[in-house]
Image 1 (tube, rainbow, N blue to C red):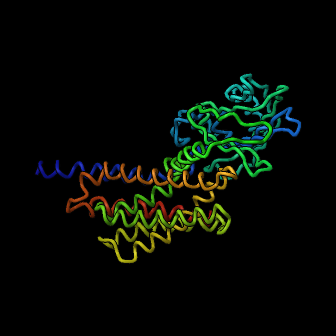
Image 2 (cartoon, rainbow, N blue to C red):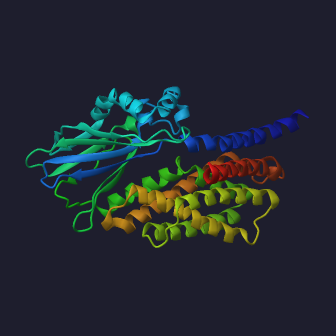
Length: 383
């Protein structure tokens, strides 16, 4: 009896960990810390610059920290929640205490010399759903030195990650970079002639694609876990992932180039419904059905549109669209493979071939996934 209990204890604990992870995902989705997005503009005379940064101002002021994927994980979560409920005027007053700190954590350098910087404007939206991040815009301005040829921008590691981009020049080129861990940009030309290499763009957008899945793409993570739970055997998993990858690659490209545009208000609920369907089918069928790859392909088309929306928001250098698209898509694939690797390490390797795998792990895990997907669907449609 003791031996039987011991043999079942490990899979039970693994299943319990999986269920806790799945049920924890809705709160992470609501309180996730997303990258900031910055637009850099130079004056026509080349005498000044303007940097508009869209960011979660409450997380910044509360010093939640970039080491947390979710605001609730921070010791300052209560302060963040307090700030989140403030009116725009009240929040602006709180930010004024933090302005000098923010300015000190920016790197703005031209020809090796630090540039002046000051806050020009802060736009804070009205209080909405306090369970969702509020995106404010902080505009920083400063003067350039006579003879300045370029500008290097940096975002302190404590501030998290940021996408910085410039306006498109007369040749259709522009600069775009994804910075994390305190990275600096390449020298950005003040005259508008950008020389960003294709290799630099490619590597940058691999990072953007990966971070969109891990840790930010919680609905995509849940969908991939649902695909994994049906069967840990290589062939069914490979067929599903291949169908999903092919489909989201198609709509990612079509969406990014404006050939296929579907409102996020329609795409996001359908993505949640796709999660529910995959989980329910895991419960009803013990093996991959003939129609499963076709439906996974169809769902992949939806997820691709979601990826396209994110990539459009981040932006791509006009002259490097294809390179950036390939890098982003590869980053998404690396993210999906990372999820599968974690699932296989925690569950598949140890218990995937056990007779009780379906009853003890696949069905309970799928029930939890279906519940989370249903919650998201209701939230995105009605709330």
